Image (tube, rainbow, N blue to C red; front, side, top):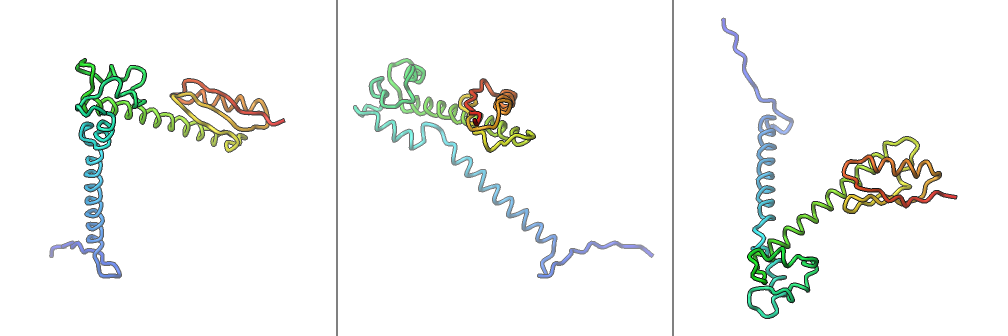
Length: 185
């Protein structure tokens, strides 16, 4: 006599098989992920095709010749400090819509990355404060700009103020610490 083992689907109270529920969850997850990836693709179009840049370009192009001169671009602060020369890739002393959008996009992406790095540094410093024994982390405010950490707030003694700076200096990515913490009288 042969022994046959049969697989049976476990049925829930509602009568739906557990295998069916698992399949449904996986299907829903796949659909959601599909929509998320389509959304991500839709968010990152070619810089020249971004309507915001086109609109800005047209507003700056006062003589409506399809190019921006050095005097026209002065209204956009992002191009201060040599931005016009960097954006003028073909050296014709004017910016096409593509040159304008490409440069502006690159500068904004760089700024976004910097802000993200600064936020990460601030979070790391704050989390180290939370782990520090006998340190009232909520009494110290932490801000970061371009890798420079600014500490402010009130503490009970000079050693706590010094320890706050010491912890911040030890975080990866910190270029300098400005310790504006005040010791309570």
